Each structure stands twice: as C-alpha cells, then as structure tokens.
Image 1 (cartoon, one colour):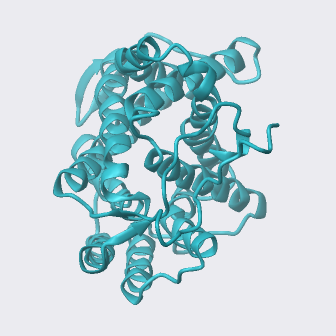
Image 2 (cartoon, helix red, strand yellow):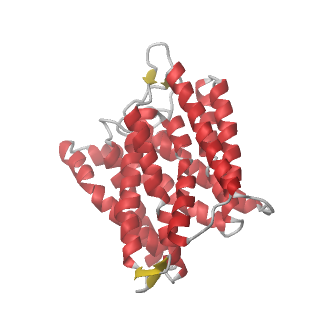
Length: 339
C-alpha cells in the first residue's frame, strides 16, 4: 500500500480548492431515467428466478451484456492512454466488487433473513449515509432543507415498502446495511469520474469485473448456477425466458449505469442519491404493469413524500449552490482505500 500517494475519497473543503456543483436539468433527467431503467430489472427477472434460473446466472448475463455494450468507451480510454489500466485498475476493481456486486449480493443475503420490504428500506438509507459522511468529512452541517428532505423522503420510503409486522434480524440488518454502504459508494465513486477516468469506462470496467467475479464463483461451485430454457408469463402473455433477461441487460442495466454514472458528476452525489429513491416508485409501477401487483393508497402517499423530500434537497442545491469537495485525479500507485 503506497501511503504517500493516497488521496482521500472526499477531501476537506478549502478556501481555494472547493468545487461548486450547480445541479443541471440534464443531469436530473439522466438520474431519473437511470432510476426508471434500473427499476425494470426486478419485475422482469423475478419470474425468471421463479422458473428455475439461479441468481448468479441472471447477474452474469445482466452485468456481462451491459459491460460489453459499454466496452467501446473502456477500449477508447485504454487506447487514448496506455497507462490507463495501470493507473485505474484499483478503481475498476473496487467499482466492480462493491457498487456492482456488493450491493446486489448483500441485498439478496439480507432478503433471505428478513422481509424484502425491510431489506429494501435499509438499503435505501444510502442518501442518509452520504449526508452523514459529508458532514463528518467536511465538518459542515447540512442545511435545514437537506435534513428536512431526508426525514420526509425516508418517511415516504417507509410507507412505500410497508414494513408493518416485520421481524428484526441482526445479521440480516448488517447485510442490508452493507448494501446501503455499497450503494453510497456507487454515488461517491461516480462523482469522482471525469476526464481522467471517463464515467462510461468506469461503468464498463466495473461491470466486466463483476461479471468475471460472479462467473468464477459459479464455476467453482461457491454459488449455484442454473439457466434452463424456460417460458415466463407477464399478465398472461408468455415469452421466452431470454427476452426479459436480454432486456434487463441491454436496456435496464446498460441504460441505468450509463445515464446514472454520467448524471452524478453533473448534480452531485447527494442529490443523485435522493433521486435514486424514485427507483422504488418505478419498481412498484413496473410490478403493477408486468405482474399485476396491486398498489395501495398508502404507497401513493409514500411516493408523494419521497418526491417532496427530493424537491427539498434540490431546492437547497438551487438556492445555496451545492459545494462539493474538490475532485482530484487518482494518482498512479494510490492506495486501494483512497478511491
């Protein structure tokens, strides 16, 4: 580990080096469309898993297809700079192991020990973790609007996922918190992407690392692997099993990562993480549209609160101009924990 070259993940603000992020409309639209694309994955993959596909098989196809589709940007970055992989391999590996694989694996491990709604709720505490992390790192307390928006959004999330009667499980809670930390890392690492490390190159490299890691776990028998030829039904309409998984890989995952990772540098990790909460709302909509899962009035009320919380956080950025700590290129030989 090279200590002298280490750069903090988020550096403390200085009088001359602070970077001001004014959230752009284009960035907000990208973040919303990214959440919409990601939200389609669950309802489309669920019937496939119920029909006999293993989670490892679904993730390998999903991540591998998206990684390949975004690979031209990675190849371009490598061709432009011969030392690209030597300088950035740690970031690519970390992105693949934590935001890509870690978030999903921790979530599904938590789901096996506690209700899905509770695991989902804890995972989506990522915006709260980001607010707390920036507070600790910068020694600058969040504004009243950010705190209010956080409380309102999380309250809405509780209503949306409906955790009434849920049981508590310590290990499951720790797994879900691990998913939340990995989700927060996604936003922080995405915010640091730029000319030195192009966002789409980071996304492609991370997805390919995730695919390779998952394939190794499946081949060695650590994770079960099954991808039978099945037919799945959506609202009574039967389609080959490859149709939904190809959609999830080519559209849901590719579009989700591409737009999401480009949106974060434009609007900041904090606002992007709050907009990411809309993925829950879109997932409920896809569940109703594709699987006929009913939505109740409480969930609609929760959705309204989530949107209200996002608006409060956005207003803070518009009024006070969100000050983000300086984002510096990761020098060659930097310590693995510095990204």
